[in-house]
Length: 295
Image (cartoon, rainbow, N blue to C red; front, side, top):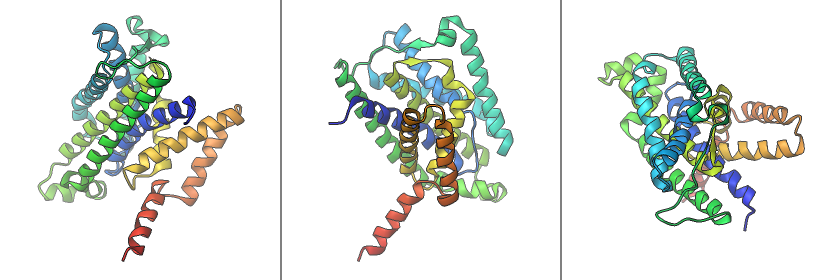
C-alpha cells in the first residue's frame, strides 16, 4: 500500500542500520570508529565485482559474500586496530578508510570516480522486475536485519558481549580475570565489519550502483551521527535511529534544499540535550513501563 519511494527509503535505512548496529557493538566497549565506511564500501564493491566478473546474481549469495569480504579485511587489519584506543583508534580507522577511497578513485578498472553498476539480483531463481524487485529487496533487508538483531542480542547477553562495559571502564581488571582484552576487541571489530559489509551489500543491491564515496570520511561521519542519534541502549535503537535519520534528511531536503544540513544538525543537538542516551532510550522506557504495569 505504500509508494515505492517510501519502501526504497526504508530499505536503505534498515541496510544502514546494520552498520550502526556494528558501531554500537564497538561503542559499548568505548571504541568509536570514524572509518566504518571502509567495510560498508567493501561489501558494496564485493557485490558489484562478483556480479560483474563472476556472473553471480543470487541476492542471498551476494549479501553473504559482501559481509564475509568485509569481515575478512577486518580480521587482518584488526591485529593492528585492536592495539589502539580512543582518538588513536578513531583516526587510524579513518585513515584506512581514506586509503581505500584513494585506491578506488585511482583504479580505472574499478570505475574510478564513476563507480560500478550492480547487477540486477535474483532470489533463488526468482527474477522480479520494477515494483516487485523493490518489494523483494525490502523483505530481504527485513529478514537480514531481523536475523542480525537476534544474533547481536544473543551476543550482548553472552560473556564476551557482557564484558564490553568492563573493557570500557577498566581493561586491567578484565585482564586480571583471565580474559584477553585484545582478543575481545578483535572479535568486536570483526562482528562490526561483518554487519557493515552486509549493510553495504544490501545498499548496493537497493541502489544498483557503487562508487568511492561509500568509503569517504563523510559516510563514516554519517554513521557516527546516526549512532549518536540512536544511542547504544538496545539493538532496535540502531534501526530506529537510521530510519529517523533517513526520514528527516529526505523531508528536510525536499522542504529546505539549501538548509537541510542545519535541520539535521538541529535534530542532533535536540537529541543530545533532551535524550542524551539517544532514541533507543525511548524503547527502554516503554519496556520498563510495560514491566511495571505487569502483575
